[in-house]
Length: 297
Image 1: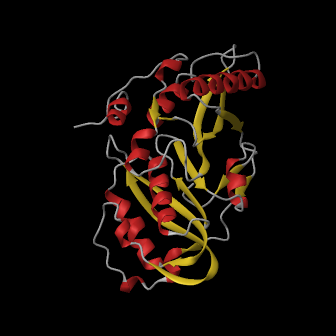
Image 2 (image 1 turned 135 degrees about the horizontal axis):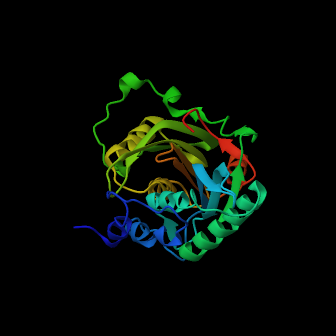
């Protein structure tokens, strides 16, 4: 039986949808965050993290009033404290409705009108401030997460036996050590859309500072256990964060960022943290920067 979130998401997902040849804000589908958060004891009014959902739409296009196409990469972000997230296929359909619609007499005017329109529509639907910017081919690519180490380098893979592919927090193990900072990358994150069950791939970046050392082998097994999980990108990021914050001590620093690869011309990069020490995060959420973390993005 489908739950409320799946019913809402199914408006477009898993169906043949023609979209619209002209601008249509009614295509936007907001998804309430509360259902999945309740399942993982994440309290709406006492979130254990702050952060943003950062989106890149690589195929945004509109036209000027005289029919000249204007094509850009669109970057947008909104706070994870919002009540809703936007369902990704609905965002794609909504952005595609700009393709054959004419805005402004020049490229600059067209982009300014599109920016203001998208910010207004999404902010209204998601009940939060949504910010948007456009990049052309001259934008500089900022490399982020350079100091994070591949978690597989800390283990001998011949010693790993993977048997669980549904989220299994009981796999996580810790040991007591001196206060230490850890910067880890896992480049084989896979989860699946909760409605269509299509796979989503990404890189996970994890920073934590604690006297508890999460054994890397156990962390690898845990992250692999998402391979048959069916959740939205943002939900997976929060699930991982919540499991780890429950494992660590109360005042430990924790940062989770999942840079998913694009699907349908759009990628999603949720970031959740309880600290402000990660410079890479500031680069990622800066709307004036095109910040990438690996070859997949």
